[in-house]
Length: 532
Image (cartoon, rainbow, N blue to C red; front, side):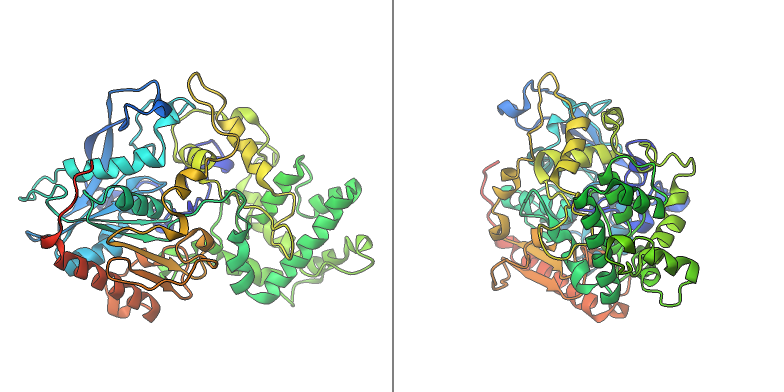
């Protein structure tokens, strides 16, 4: 997801290298040269407040802000549709690959369409205010964001394109993955009189507060000797922390060279980074695996390869027995390799060696979180704290890949520190999950709204194809597709040659093309209501 995940907001490691649910690996950061100039930035004057009668947004403002967008008309022919790619929790420039080689390019080419990326409010360079105080963030809501999508479809201009492409005169079809997938679904549900259709990929349409299920696909599909070893190590660690044996805990921390970390939850989060979360991690892991090598990394499997190395040097395997005195002489198989990989890979991210600082692995500095500088991480955390929830936590029972001390309170404290009570706004004690769930949850439907998910996505249980979702029949008006073996919105990636893609991705793309083509055949008979 949400959800996600590399945005820069807070200084140092804890902010600049966060992996959020949906950041494209090869598109991170600013693009240079030809790539940056390929799609010049345009702006639309977007109302800051679309709901001047709602008390939630008092005091209301009447102004606008400059919201960026980028478009590609390479394949456009008169009468073709507009494909609106929802930017989600990153800069719009980080989505250029979707116009060049990804799902928007695929759909544009197949249907003579025009593609456009709209940068979400409070991301990239599309900020309504000079800073992101608690009060200034009150206009960052799902409701305001999806209203941007409808307004944009009715008012966007595309220089050099000799056609009136405003909605609903032209068919607008949205696409979004992860957080943007949810926004796509909610936009089509709410503004079906303006927006002709949408494809919601890996879209969180159900909200929960604790979300231990994030780790379920890793448990099920990761290399099982690695998973078993990590589960066993974490169970042993939990036994130490439950016993409050401070001497043993200090020994454990020193094995990872993290003795300076005062809060046991900071230690727990930091050693969980090779697995992922909670909320952030600085190096790619399971969620960032991809069928397309340009957007995938080997880090998760490198970690598992180290943990399961049966030929590790004796100096490393000896560490497996270092804490055996606390487990009746039974060694912690793989602990030495786990710690060795961690120290080689993660400690260099903190060259100062001040591991308990906010610039490294510590999270307990309240002042650090309260920095009101505009930035994507601050915006994403706000949405997590106020609406989305889905805090990654350890399960209440059974095997676990992360320590049991990682629970809702750990993430919630960041929310409380980051967004102190403002003059007008106080954040809820816990996220207002009813906002997302009010759109229908797992039963959300709208005409010409397609859902596509991946079976090994850590966010799957918030999506249309959640493991506890009812079986449903796909139809042309309400199509759905679960890609077996796919991760987080893998359908959004492409290589400019569908025939050369792996068969399971190729078939998903062909399904998306067919779905949209069927919809477009009915556009001439579409009679949208006039509710907005």
